[in-house]
Length: 235
Ligand code: SAH
Image (cartoon, rainbow, N blue to C red; front, side, top):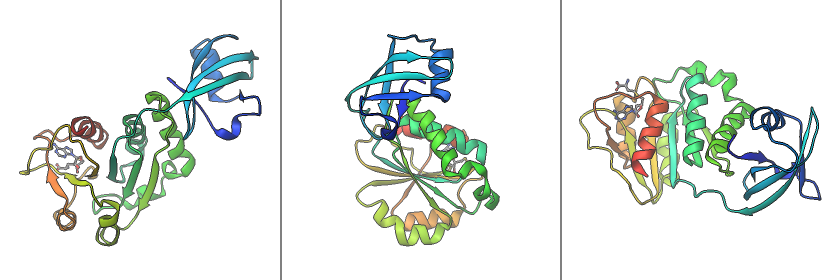
């Protein structure tokens, strides 16, 4: 936990928060902080700064917040991710939140198992939890927006043009395609496929929306690795 994240609702009229959950335990048992110590803190979707411990008990920590600076700038990307299997989803969410993605579309594709949509990992509170872990790691406060699209064709044909308007459009796809560019300096919409990859028809649908397939070499990366490798290469 590099940044203590609190919600606006948790802050009282004196600018203090009282923590009794995982964060309290982390402060007491991992950071081993005492009254008078400070740690970095932020409000979800708000400012960052410091929090000073003003009271400590075995079951609770009370802190006074001093928030004054903006979180790190977001990555200018909309990520379209074929819904990964649950364990991979959890890790991908943490990585992409840490890297600064603020808009994520989780979509059905031909090679996504339908049962993944029933996974408890897709419950809003689970998704929230993984995104928070990613933000804490990156010292960021801006919670990514997550959109679900469980039908690929209507999403791509009817909605993607406006979602991806005025952006560079790339689909990561191994094969005989141009190499993925580096250090682009523009808004991007990036599609990443499932473990089995996109099928040809899906690539054709994306190409019809002006998505360019790009590859990153002959090594096939796991989805969570592909997310990290592609984003760090592109930005
Ligand atoms: N089984 C598929 C690859 C799936 S990897 C195959 O062998 O073709 C999961 C996703 O990660 C892919 O759909 C792609 O979006 C991305 N990816 C992984 N490795 C990649 C590479 N070397 N180049 C481009 N994209 C890659």
